[in-house]
Amino acid sequence: MKNEFNFADNIDKTKITLIRHYMAEKGMDSADFDEQLAKEINEAVEVMYRKYVPRAVRELFAQESFTLKKTVAPAVKSEDSRKEVENNG
Image (cartoon, rainbow, N blue to C red; front, side, top):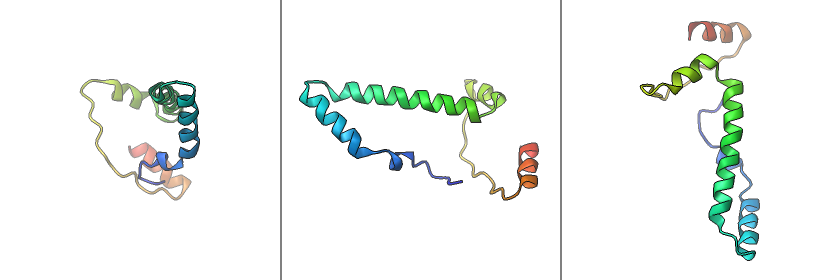
């Protein structure tokens, strides 16, 4: 698992540029595209968040006093060690 947050590197920027170009040709504001794209990305993130992050963690994260600290997840190579990591936090 990579620790970098680099999903933007995998987004097709050429298609985004073309969409913005043709929207501009039709007199549409690219801010509308940006808003729609952000909305759709956030919806996809929400689906994945609910799928992969346990409910207890989501509830903890929702608390006002919660602070996210950057930590590096341990590299887990086997099923047994993965279970040990899950059980020990």
